[in-house]
Image (cartoon, rainbow, N blue to C red):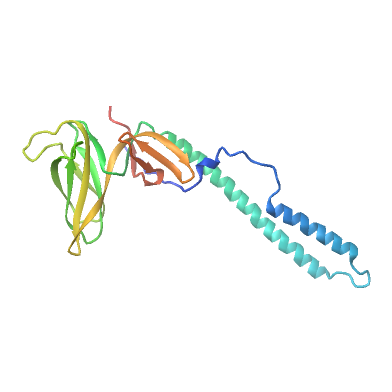
Length: 227
C-alpha cells in the first residue's frame, strides 16, 4: 500500500470555533482619531497661512500605509484559518489508519515482520535495537545499518535468538549506537494505529492505540491498518 507524507502546523486550532466580534480594531480606531484630528486641524487653520498640501498628503499616506499592513495581516490570518480547516479534515481521516511517527511502541501480529525505523546521525557506528515485550523482558537484539544516516529501516521477523517465534502482542524498542567514542541513544520510529485526534492551541495531536500521542507534523507515513 502506498504511503503518504504529511506536514504539520503550529496554528491554534482551538480558535476555529471562537465567536467573532464586530468591534472596531485598534487600527480602525486610530484611523477614526486621525481623520477627526485632520478635519479639526483644517477647520481651525489660519486662512492666511493654510496647511501645506505636501504635509497633509504625507500624513494621509502614512496612515494608509499602516492601514494596508493591517489589512494584509487580516488576509494572512484568514488564509491561515482556511489552511487549518483543511488540516482538520486531513487529521480526522487518520483515525483507524496506521501512522509511522516517533515512538518506541509497536504491535506484532505474530506472523508479519515488524517494520521499525531509527534515526542514525552522521558518524555513528555499532548501532543496534533491543526489543522487549510488555513486561519489559528482552526478546531480541538486532543490528542497525549505520553506513547511512537519517531514518534507517530495521525489520524484525518476530523470531527470538533461539529461532522460536515470539507471541503476538505489544512490544517496545530502544536503540543505541556509538559516536565519537561514546554511547548515544537513537530515536525510534514505529507504526501505530491512530485512535483519535485533538485540535488545540499547540496544533493537531494524534492519540495512538498504545496510549501515546504524537504531533501531526511528526508523522512520516500513513497506510491502511492491517485487517
